[in-house]
Amino acid sequence: MRQTGREDDDPEDGPSPTVGPTRPRLFKVLGPGLITGASDDDPSGIATYSQAGAAFGYGLSWAMLFSYPLMVAVQMVSARIGRTTGRGIAGVLRLHYPQWLLSWVVVLLLIANVINLGADLGAMADATALLMPVPHVLYVLLFAAICVSLQLFLQYSRYVAVLKWLTAALLAYFGVVMVVHVDWRALLANLFWPHLSAKGGYLTTLVAILGTTISPYLFFWQASEEAEDMQVHPRRVNLFDAPAQGARALRRIELDTFIGMGFSNLVSLAIVVTTAATLNAHGLTNIQTSAQAAAALRPLAGKFAALIFTLGIVGTGLLAVPVLAGSAAYAIGEARQWPTGLARRPKEAQAFYATLVIATLIGMIINFAPIDPIKALFWSAVVNGVVAVPVMAVMMKLAARADIMGSFAVRGTLQFFGWSATLLMAVVVVAMLAQLL
Image (cartoon, rainbow, N blue to C red):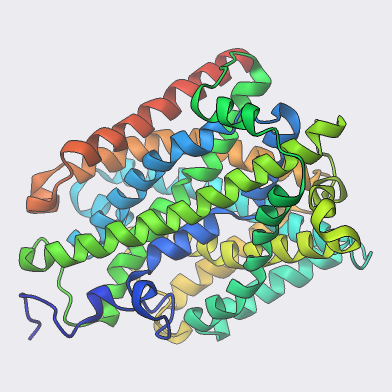
């Protein structure tokens, strides 16, 4: 029988199976939040932040600082839902809300995820072509096959252990900030005293930034991973039934989320500053190709700029594609009451893994349309920003219900920041649509 008291020898403050068991001290508490933060800087994010820096210089840098507490709050709410109920968001909706609402939320998630997934595959192919020119479609097929194979045959913790070295290429943006001329006065002024604009391009880019920073797939992923971690660590019990485990569990979630989202936002800010100081400063305000985006790294990497850019795009893409496909599979599986989870073998969760594969294949097919990869990345972020608003509203209402969350229902500061993020995104989306229409 599971114990419902303190988890002294249970790794509630130890390694998550999605991260791996070899991390010392501080990293032992990092789990779903760290992976969520890392996957947040996917190719769509890199392209969006690069376009923001190129088009507006330091003018949108404030969004990175302003969005940090909001994204932390939203992801913390997501994690709390999973840890408290022992279910993902779709699973909770299935039990407590009408079928039409569940279907509506899952469909919105699927649309946003498949578009984002397709854009990421296209960007990985386009970036790799910088090093070895090959027809775009062949690289798309190759990366889709790699992603499907790795999801089916490789344990996810090992998968992440390999990819973390590729995503380290993103640290190059910090190096560029150190070697190029950054107008620090302008940067600080825009960070803390921004000049807002109601123009369509500004609002669309802001929606894209918020959409790639606070994305629906991240909510579903973190909640489902928290629930799945409970299956791997048998002494953990959902907090609704075992409130005594709450203090340690919530401390772990808070630290995990603060650090994971902090890493994500620092990388985002570095990309904006880098492209503002290199591309925008030299008159390139509209990134149309991967080669132009890679040029931002040239002051540090020289002739190796394309290589580092490609490693960053491919590494984050390979990390993000399973999260995108996985969050879709979790949502559908929980809605349909299928066995779900990356900890299961494919034979144990055939429908779940079939959904992973199908979502990846649909994303691959999108790339056969004549769509520019860089624009696809940017507009997939815009779609995420639009879809996030209703999903966040449903999630915040769910998290505040005591009959679902017990004594861990979201209240106070966390509730304030969660609703603030929802209302901010709603206002910006409505303003953007008013300009576009």
